[in-house]
Picture 1: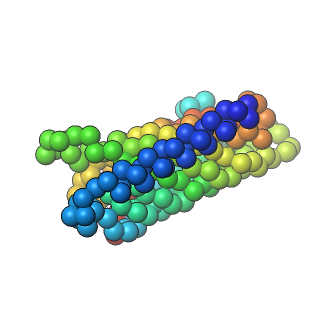
Picture 2: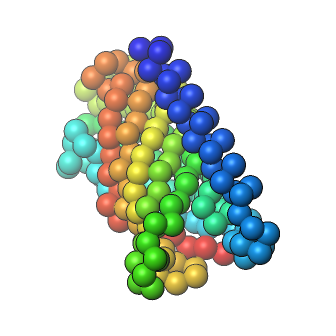
Length: 181
């Protein structure tokens, strides 16, 4: 189990190093046009994989470091009839520019990952759980205009300290909206 976590962290470090290297390879005119720190706020609505009847709300404040990379806090609130899940993570997101057409250029797939803490309260049990959380995900964002984007993303979450039945879960935020400043 420990080897998996080390491999996951090593993969994340390699991904971030590759991102930094590709940013340095851009021409200075591209960098001047694309770089610049911008803030945004976002909210999303979805559900958990093991409980489609449960509600999953996501809130984030991503800071765009450049055209492709953003970092920031992500808060997830999961509600169902018999449990409450609250998670806070520091996330990194990398957007890919893969489409060339005028309309498709606004569609940007992304990978993301983060670390943080998760709290689980089960009504059927007396003890609550709090643990270290690691997540990874993928999704796509469509830029409606310069200030508004809609997105959808799938997150895979691991909390090794939770009991085995809750140590891994996935969530899908099927509709998200982001407002850029």
